[in-house]
Length: 115
Length: 110
Image (tube, rainbow over all chains, first blue to last red; front, side, top):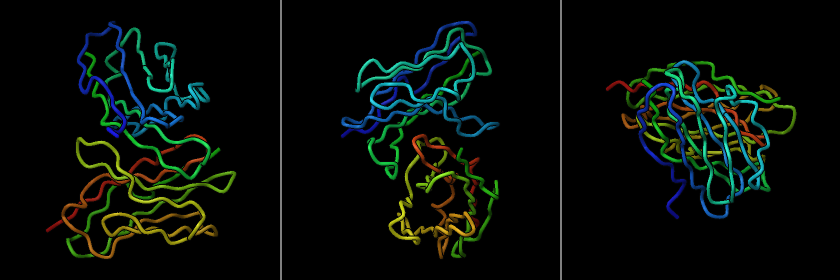
C-alpha cells in the first residue's frame, strides 16, 4: 500500500484565495483525521471522520474551514478565504476503525503558505 | 475529555547516554497511548503503542515506554541515545479521536 497520500505537498497562495487540500487514506481504513501543525500551537486535531461521517469538528478554527469526505477513499479540507495565519503544515491520517487501540498512519503533509 | 501533557519541551542528552521523555495523560476511560516521532521536515512515524496488553511496551529503534496507571504516566525511554534519535517526539492519547501532546524536542550531542 502506498500509505496516506496528500496533495499538493506544497501550496503557496495569496490571501483571500480558496485553498483545497486533498487526502487519500489507506484502503480499508475508515477513520480519517485532519491535523494542523504550527510552531505556536503544535499539532491540533481539526476534524475526524468515521465511515465518511464527521464525528467531531470542534477543532475547526472558524467557518472559513470546511472538510468533506464524499467516499471512503477521498477527503478534502478547504479554506475559503485563506489568510496568512492559516500558514501551517496540514496532515491527514487514517486508521482502521472498530478498535481504539489502533494507531493512525500519517501522510507526508501539505505545507501551506498564505502571502 | 482526554489530554496528554509532555513535561519537557526540550531534552538534550549526549550520545550514548539514556533518554527519558516524560508524558502524563488524562482520560475518562482506559486510554490507548502512543508515541510518535517526527524528524525535521518529515511526517509522523509510530514508535510504539500501549493497548492494555502489557504495561511495558517495546517499540522501534530501541525505545520503550511504561504505562503506570497510578501515576497516569507513559514515559518514553531509551538506554543509549544515538545521533539519529534527534527529532520531535509526541505522546498521544486515543479514545475515538487522537490528541497530541505539545511535543518534546530531543537533541543529541556528540
